[in-house]
Structure formats: structure tokens, C-alpha cells
Image 1 (cartoon, rainbow, N blue to C red):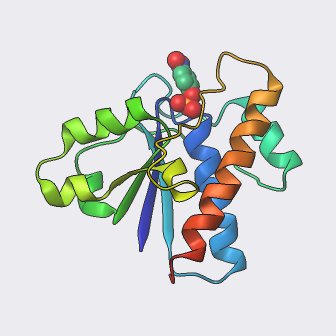
Image 2: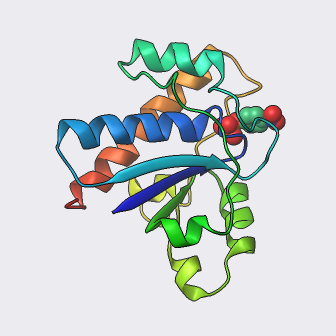
Length: 152
Ligand code: 4NP
């Protein structure tokens, strides 16, 4: 299975979502390929935000190797599941969908924790350090829920 995590800039939320998923995939020896992307191009080529790299490290995740890229329509061909961090990301991904097969791949990340609640992973970019930890807590819970229902 191939799973893509998507946010706006691909420097805060989706890189840590990728980092958490890839760590759990390695621990549990699962056959899941992971990647992340942003709907916007502002930060293409950049490493994750330094505040997220630091908070991730404190939680045992090294995401310093990741580099931002923009989501493209070809990602619908490359991935089986595309997780959007918030409703705006979700809508922007769906705008690029070519058919119902593409559309069916897109999910809101926190619906893995609370199906149908349509909760969002809040954008931590303009806030304080506690926002970054909150994002990690939300994503660990959602990714664990996702993996508990997936068998590779
Ligand atoms: P992300 O956070 O979507 O979680 O990577 C953001 C990063 C950068 C910006 C907005 C959100 N920005 O406007 O530059």
C-alpha cells in the first residue's frame, strides 16, 4: 500500500504525519510506502519547519531528511490513500481529481480517529510551540487507529 500525507506547506503537519507513519511501519514491519506533499508551492525543496523538527525529535521522530514538494495530479496514480490534514487541503486535492476513482482515495486524516466527525489537524505555523506538540498528539492517535484497521 502507498499512503500520501498532505497539508498546505508540507513543512509542518504532513512531514510529521509521514514521519510518524514511517516509524510505525518500520517498527511493525508493514508493507506501506509513505510520502508527503503540500497543496501550495511556497516551501518546495525546504526541510520541515525547525520548530517541527525539534518537537518531532523530542517525541522520537527524526524528520530532518524530508523535503517539501507540491501535490500533483500524478499523485492519484502513485498512491492508494491520500490523507488531507484539514478541510481546505481536502477540497484543494479534490479539485484536482479526474474521476471518482481519484476522489475515493482522499480522506480527512482525523476521521481515522473519529469517523465522520470531519475534525481538522490545526495549522501550527503561526502559533506557539504547544501547537506543534498538539499536532503530534493528534496524528499519533489517528495513525494508530488507521494502522489498527489496516494489514499492510
Ligand atoms: P503546513 O503549515 O501546511 O502544516 O506545512 C504551513 C506552513 C507554511 C504556511 C502555512 C501553513 N505558509 O503560509 O507559509
